[in-house]
Amino acid sequence: MSEKERAVAEHFGVIVPPDLAWPQPELFPNREGLVVPRVETGEEMLDRMVWGFPPPAARR
Image (cartoon, rainbow, N blue to C red; front, side, top):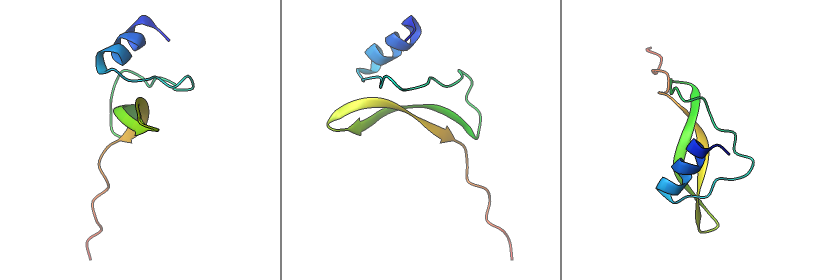
């Protein structure tokens, strides 16, 4: 884990899972970004999610 990643974890007071791959710093639709926090077993942990908007409903 880099110093920057460690600083993020300390700032939010969360645990960083050892297998968490940090996403790219840019956040665009359909790309992964960090979610703070995810509660698992009573501890707040960082996780990744794909960000974006659902496609519009088809018109009939």
